[in-house]
Amino acid sequence: MPEHPDFLFWWGIGFAILISIGTIGTTIYTVLESRQKENRFRPTHRRTYPKC
Image (cartoon, rainbow, N blue to C red):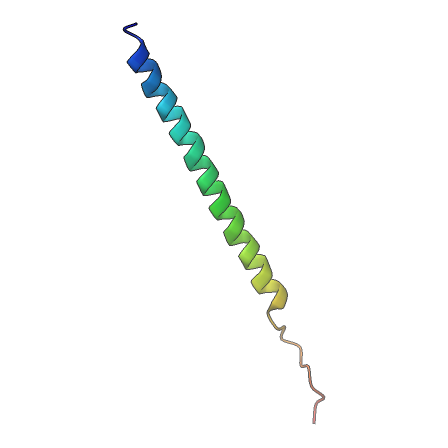
């Protein structure tokens, strides 16, 4: 089986690519979700008290 180490090499590269895509996707999703929460609870420019 001379091709066996080569097969393991490419399988390892494919597995590493899948793990990195999952990590990057999770990070992007978390950052976008936290930005939406910040925008949701950020006060607007409108006055919340009566004008004197």
